[in-house]
Amino acid sequence: EIVLTQSPGTLSLSPGERATLSCRASQSVSSSYLAWYQQKPGQAPRLLIYGASSRATGIPDRFSGSGSGTDFTLTISRLEPEDFAVYYCQQYGSLWTFGQGTKVEIK
Amino acid sequence: EVQLVESGGGLVQPGRSLRLSCAASGFTFDDYAMHWVRQAPGKGLEWVSGISWNSGSIGYADSVKGRFTISRDNAKNSLYLQMNSLRAEDTALYYCAKELAAAFDYWGQGTLVTVSS
Image (cartoon, rainbow over all chains, first blue to last red; front, side):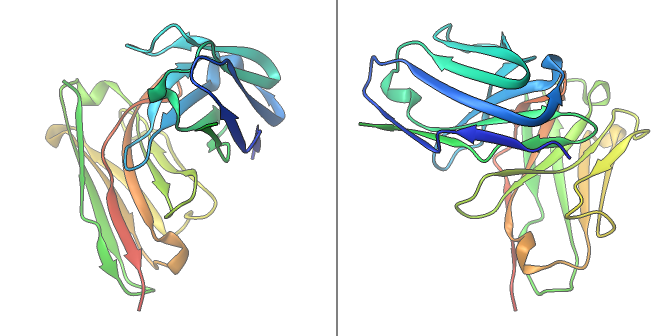
């Protein structure tokens, strides 16, 4: 089973700042099978990025994904008030696994 | 508009069974693989099980293998999860999700399963 480790656990930033979230895999992941989700309290997760760098339908271009192999990054170029949430990475190898999440909170 | 509506959750005693359902609409159900993902209270996301469009490929997380069974009825646009030998650690909000390119592009609002005596 591929284990995904997200860092940092919590990111404290102000609106307008840049957020950089990391997802590291215990073994190489196909870039085609790395995704990022946003989850707000009381809501279901929302797909942001799939295939490591492709934005899902309706996702603003301030969200971008990059990386390959074992190291992947989600970048939010300028935080909007609605972006403060928990973010998860997810991979598909032989099975699906999620990272433990990064909380982006208002500083 | 894609809609996924889960049902069947509730309070159940350890060792008992429960069957979850997910009613899908707004897309061609039998074109897509479907999954169950759960989230324990205050915790992260855990993939539980997935099934291909024609039920030909099925997978389970190690934590539920041998106890849970996923199935689908394409004629009814429905996904199911039969959960047997339930444990306290199965307590969670269970989401139904549609797969797109190995990611989950639509999610239901979830159904809560509580395993407690």
